[in-house]
Length: 636
Image (cartoon, rainbow, N blue to C red; front, side):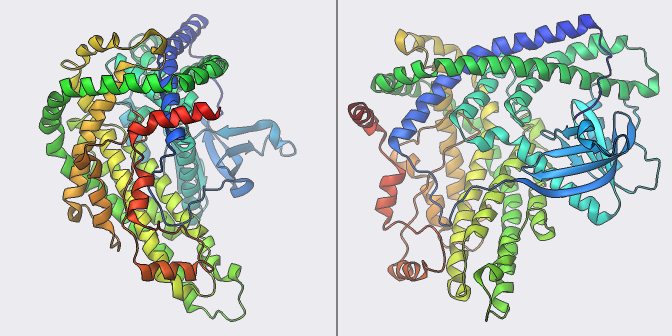
């Protein structure tokens, strides 16, 4: 976060840590190369199939970042590096947070400017909340519970604490409760933006990296990876390195430090900050070298995949069928014994929080529309009329309530820590908040003119449809994130040892892109998804997915379509991006005519002409993949 190094480590210890950091990246590299090739094959398949995912009705546009614009700025007391100073804080439209010391050199503040790194941080506004975060971080350090809280030398009653597990504490003090809430909101939005950097890329490279991290940790017997998947690639891999070096720091380095007993907690925090800074530097260099190497080999990989795609798919399908036949019963029994008894309760807890948040977002939108319709429209431009809609920032009081509802999820899932060893609730919250932000942005992108009263119901109908799609997608993704690692751990003694027999089925020339462990995990995921979809389909009334959407049953029934027909949507193998495809019935002819008449007033995506047409576009038959590949090669 831009602090000074404490130099608690001697040169030998620093050299040893640098070597361990490089060793972790070196051991991680084979996993990354395998997952990169696997993810690229799936990327090419998706490109050739031109498969569509969930069919939304509102106009979907990316959330724009206002680069260069100021979101919030102010001069506040800031505690950093064990001291208070007056600093000017600036948050830009792309969520960069800059801090400048204005007292030391007010004419050249850029010389002492630092950037606050917020990925993976927890941000709170009370000493009690921060102490809970600290106690949680120190629970494995007996005797280090005493620490020096950032006490203010002046009458500042509105603090905002920024806590990172491996960086020094930062505290800023606002001058009023409204200013405190403003900084809390914008800093949390910045934290969410930076913590979900890889997921928002939605690229095969990002998916390959996360899968490589997961496989690297599973190789060491660690399956609870959700807590580490936040931030940039450098952040994630640095957290993995810290996971490896922490035991040595606790047992060997920290006990040798000569510090007063009431300063042990502060000394431990400074030690972690110094180690993490060193690790980040080494990981950044090694990861850059690894990415350059992969970029150089990409043209050869692309040529190999495109020329041999037909053979690659044939081998994969053969192994999948054989593996499914031999392991299906064992996997199904394990799911029924360990997962199914808890699926319903988990789904209900998650759905409750999602329903509250999305209902609140709908209410904000409808209130803004009501304000437009209740105003006198004569002589007003479209821009003036729609200002209540386009001015719905995510940090406004009504909109902030939507996001705060999703922050209830960790409390609702607290029991899963003991049941499944799940620690990724924060990732689920951030993913849901991103999805809610995208849906709200789609609301604001819908251009409504003077005839809003005429099209108001149709817009709400499309909003409710998309809301159900998003909530169902989030539910299924979260259920997979929670249960799949536990299932893989339980199946390892019985199923994973049998994978060696399938290695001989892979031709030597395809060994770089076909990996048995990935196929095995897709078979496990396929079996798990059948039961998850069944839970979502068979009891929709329990999970409060619907706001006012009449097509809820059609959407939920489509979740079981693949299960009933025996077709399974190809999976990426990553439970960070679980596939989601639905079939939606056609609107009535009267509504289609209304859409055509309203198209000059509302810029929204129209429904397909028929459900058959949508089915053909959403479920491209997998056995036609070879024809797609051959057509692509012939065109080339």
